[in-house]
Image 1 (cartoon, rainbow, N blue to C red):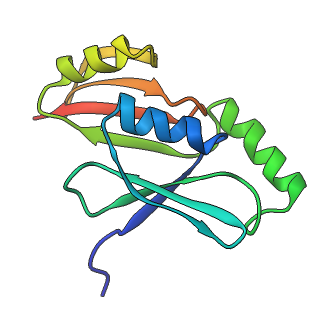
Image 2 (cartoon, rainbow, N blue to C red):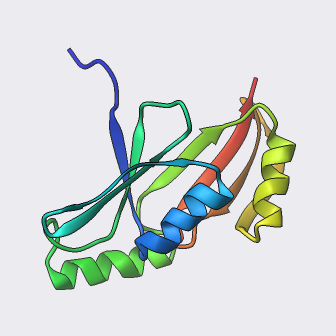
Length: 134
């Protein structure tokens, strides 16, 4: 029987840029950052949370060069298939933080059936929602 989701993955175009965004703009912490054979294994997580997010650069060992290029093209258009959702106790403060950092906000704070949230994109084009849930 499954117990929990340990790690998720999103594709990023530049791991250093993604690391800066996820740690300095969103306030996540580094889980692991190491050479893992042919790739850099770079994870971040919400402080205090066990679940990590792998910031994966398309390429070896999972993809050949042609496939990696196709994935990068899709990711840069916001069509990479990955997205993240985070919860917060103060959606207005979270919005102000990412706005002050110059993040690409794609939807201002709105009221939803489940709470209030807003949307943004990371530097690679991945969709992110941050919300205060009811």
